[in-house]
Image (cartoon, rainbow, N blue to C red; front, side, top):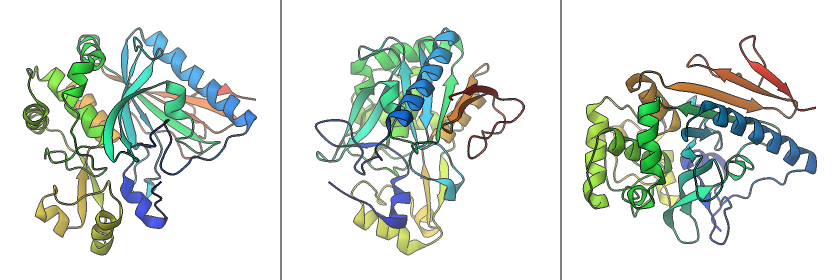
Length: 302
């Protein structure tokens, strides 16, 4: 098992990693008490109820996992929740890095598993984006089509993959490229043909990846040297010279959806062990600590 300590963990940039033989993070999540498990499962049930009420069959879901607050980001890992999943309703189709195999895989994970263990035991955040009906139907068909979904799975993984290079791919970039292929009506082909087309479409539509201002070059090179799923050789020289990574993150995908799909809706959820908050709309995000504000719906957990 690979372990990452101290500030180097920031350069995981959020994508989930799994250990072969069962979905587990390379760094084991904390054990939950029975009370904590119960509250998290109730949180999941509230999210599922909202998804059911949407009347749609697909949603972009993003969870808070790796602590990226240094970079003013909350959400680190995105996937597509699918009501008609063969696994269980509202399973999340996502890219995971399998540590023991050192390879990326697509994985269908129940919403409970997607959330439980990814956040702090008594504090969790989830963002949901609902697409306009016409685009939602197209994306649902594409995401449920296993052959089509696998056409955009790159053989080589990098948590900090540069979004406009086909050398590597991270979990969020898989979502962005599948979205691009669907909305851009890209045809069939091999992964090495389709991924550059999807990236070109994203760039032409004004897609802007998240910028990680590392600010200290030794850390930038040290991360690539010591973490096997972080790389520098796909990033432009000028970005490396500025000690900056441009990476697909949930926030960049959400912003792109908001700007290009009229009628897309966002719902943000959080729980702090005492209550669940629900906030609708594209305004400011929920407060740290999951503190209620007047516009939030509040559901008590006690």
